[in-house]
Image (cartoon, rainbow, N blue to C red; front, side):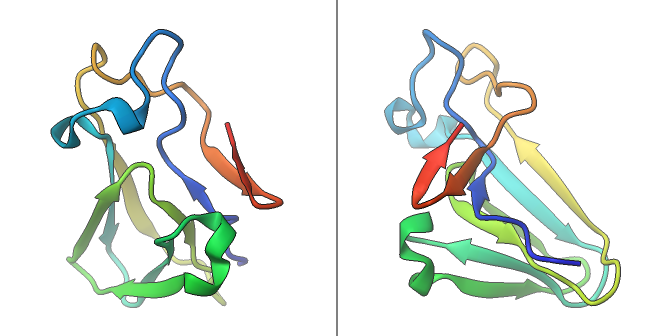
Length: 114
């Protein structure tokens, strides 16, 4: 099963709401990954999708949770066999940030698109 394309989980907010860059740190949406199988992996792009050479593969083990800012570029790792893990979003109140349904920031050709 192949690797996901690089993306972030928190796309631009709905019109009229503050951008992620304008939010207080305490209000930035988060993402979380819970490992329920050994060797759960996530590609992390700390400098965005334009700097793929800086990406690294983070591994967490059963019972561990990785939490990151919702605007961090990442990609689910590919596995030789089916691998189950739990992925969740932790959002502030909708009055602060309302996650647009069915959208993500997908990196294509060096750009992040909603």
